Length: 547
Image 1 (cartoon, rainbow, N blue to C red):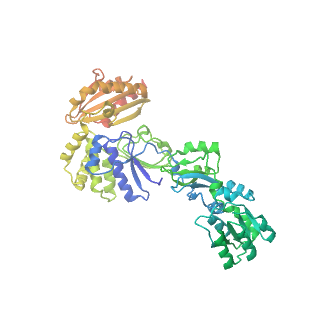
Image 2: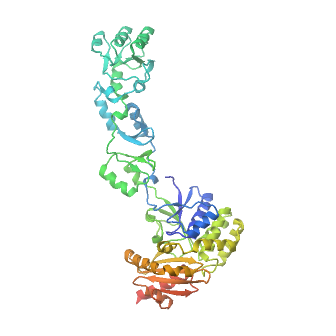
Image 3: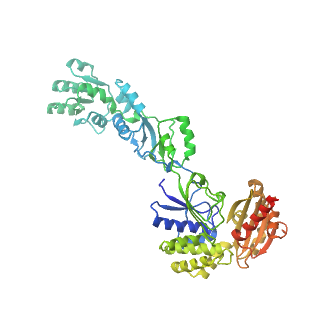
């Protein structure tokens, strides 16, 4: 996996979360050496999907964790080998790359086996197994490479070496030759001819000796291949077993390999149990891309992450504690994300994180692209409800005006289309409605969940109100919430119906000095979760804790 900056909004992403991540990635790609990749932590809601399709922008990729994975490590990039190369070549590659094992792959680059130094050494010890070539299906090309030999004559396209290995330096040795044998002989044309006439499948001439034309013709007539090596007979006999292909000695069964998607914490335990020198690494297509050892786990690379539109662990990506947080761009309260070193943290009391991102563009003299300007417009409109929210500021208005000129959109017309596309509740399930924009907070030791959904027609919500309340009560039981709140915001009237569940739902009554009618109440003028709901809840819970 390439090293990158991952820019992420919060879970259950809204339009501001998605658009801010995409826009800030564009800014970083213009100013930072590492590629910036916007990611998302959940499904895209209807409003955001409309925005992305309107400006023809692809959604961010989905990532469910930023925990360190094998793909984040600086693994050894030693190329895998083919199963038909010689042991000598495999040995040379191990020494050249200073590795103890090599992955063996098939023609599709899929893992086929593992060859190690111990595999090679054990074969050297069995050098006088005279039938090793017939057992291993050794190619004549391997023998030529191992003995640095040159070709005089080769019989057929793929000569079969089925016999035993014999060194024949004297006439007395000729009687030991049987049909199909591989014979190492000297410069004597007489012995060379006798070797061929006895039916040898391969005649290996040592000491760079010449081969007479008559001998070459005899080899062709008798179906014998002939090669010449600069080595003497003793050295050739000692080295020839290294011609055996790695397929003969490699380990094929019970191979422990890791995927680039495997988590570092999990493979550490496997390494402790198996204790091999190294392990092959495969990608998602099962192609071998290198190898890994325990050494690589010492200096693991953490994913580099930038958080936008949140700074609360419960709202952030899984594994955030295992990542390196570089920056936070947000417009919410400062919460509980911890970092190991100082970072760039920009937190402003504006209506939208995208307002801050737009400011960063302009402060650095960089003009966002037309598409990105459009996304930022949509996010500001969405988060401020076109400035009906009390969170809206003059900075939001200024940025929207500048961005709309770049994006070339009619703000009022676009807003109506966007809200219409995103706020209909008629064909949505209770789960879809509740999780459209859901956030979890830890307030004074209480686990608080607050969802908000905006609509142009609040009457369309009433038929499914009871179903949603049942869903909320189930979530309270299953997930341990102290209080769960759903804000159904009427964009036209500028108010919200608040539905509450949980043992501590009376906190809502105290916070707003109202009485719940069953489990809900309509609060005119309340449309901001961040500025109008969280603060009074926090204050009320704090007062209760003190008493």
